Image (cartoon, helix red, strand yellow):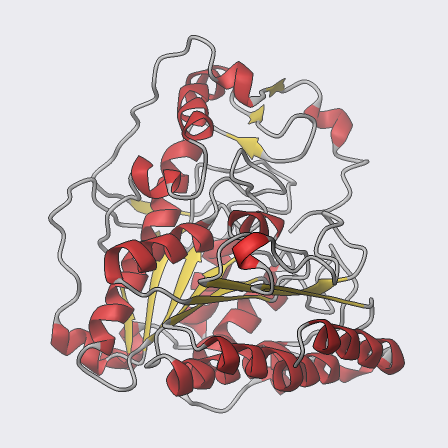
Length: 429
């Protein structure tokens, strides 16, 4: 979820830059906590629900609500975490919500089939510290004072990961939404064989955030934090993470390098940011073999991804035998997305959502939670997420109404085949 910043760097140079060491110097802790609110995006005029609670006694949806639902989602739009003209902007989640409304994929139109989780707790500092260094967490909290004064600060050295005065708080909200969805799916799975599939429509995204700090638009590792939560709170020892963002999820990769109980599988465009995710990055120590990285050549599209799913993802998951599947769902591999050059379509994302849902049903009692990562063309992002919802519901794809086959070109099938064969050899698939 990254892009070249040549054109943007000059306009960012006037903003204050912070390293973790700077963050840790002398600023009082930022305590911007709200009990709940209704947000309105200036970009889309769409009303976005982002209710949450700072209390610790919130309850999950009722057993009946969970048993009736086929899809459960939570919204954390982080409207205060925004920089105009930045691709990772506050317009992203409202665009998705607007599309879900327009396409009648919300509780208003679907009744009990679709459940929006409207009240959930913020993630605690301990939750965040299960993945990130406490010095980073406290340093970012302290930096909010400076963000309030400056309006915008850079928190990744000279990189393009920014923060505003609300970033720390809204990042806790985003992570908390993911934890609440894990709780809900686990609760539902205790009473039914086919629990709802969950989707955290959240930002800031997370899969680039490394244990020691932010990176690549990402603040906290939402998927990684949810994985530790699933283990610690629910006793779900074996967690299978699928990351189909166009960029390598280096932060999630690094968080679990030596952990044999969390399998991280990433498909991404070869040579794209951040330059990690090579074939031979397979984990270390006890975790060796529990990391699989598959860099795909530019131009790879629907055919490539269908083959990857059948020949790589399925056998990996079957061999690992997970207790839950978590998904870093990045939609920046879409052919219309400006930040990379894969040729995924809305139909590709429908296929992935449908197949991953079935994989979870086959292997881990249907326990599956998607987390929004990248996706910067608002049209392709919103249509692809909407079609993912249709996949969760078991309804036909409407991708043909949006996708334009005329803009696609021939996939590099020979190079794709070579990449798949190489990763299958390394991992004995």
